[in-house]
Image 1 (cartoon, protein in one colour):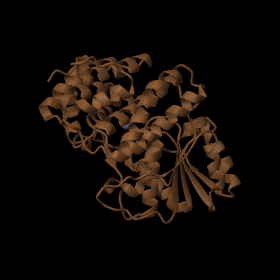
Image 2 (cartoon, protein in one colour):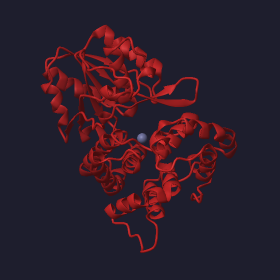
Image 3 (cartoon, protein in one colour):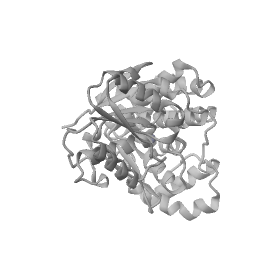
Image 4 (cartoon, helix red, strand yellow):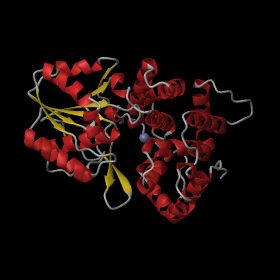
Length: 387
Ligand SMILES: [Zn+2]
């Protein structure tokens, strides 16, 4: 038995007005200080006030949030007892809010104990709305909660199906102020979700269409949104693509680029989208024949030419590198600025951490520990995988 889990998705310009239709007495906005500065919190407050709600704001979510921050936010929710929890921000804020909401609902369960095999029960105290301000993680549509495990140089994946938000509010107006570099990294993260979800061992009929569409939209609109952040059509299409990819991959899982990307981000603090996207083409080369038909299907969707007798995997890997280069993203670990001696000192830890990541389970050709270390060395030097 399998499930396809999804929130209500409200999308398009002015999707934010959905907030004015909510019923309840008190809303708590979970966000970060940057969202306050950009004026986005005021925009959300304005709509919630129209719904007649009182509002409290917790703006203490840091990038790559810790378990401690989630516990603080859960205590905040328990203090104010809202009917609605409104997460406003990127993946860090939305993931933290999912954990806080769980801690509000079930104070007896620790966030680090949340996993797909332990049901949490339905939300009875407050519903959860997620409003993404980046077009990448798709966290508004997923139950996953990625948190930093303090003192261990690694990120942990937590969450269970009941952590899925009730409403994903996908309004491109909130993506307009992303600087080009963030647009590039988050857009490539969405692409990585879509390609990994489409080719993981848990791929399925319900996710496939969403993921293929997301792949196509990112290739078509990311360069435009990167060049001109005010290109509203490109912003809207990318915002939709990120949510489509989120809906798809959370129901089919990601794969090796996320396992290795989490490891790289955990040790060197490489931004998530940059880490997974730079590793993605190497994983396509590594997985190779185990998914050749699917690489060909993606290439066909993207109208990439695969000459007769040639394999699609390297052609797709090249197209992804060309796209990343067009938005000025690095193509090797070395290009991210990590010095060779620091990398060499940490490469065993990178391989160890990647091998513990659940996403390797859903990789069509999972590497052993020696292969994982070799993989990182190739990706450091920018060398195509040939093993
Ligand atoms: Zn990701």
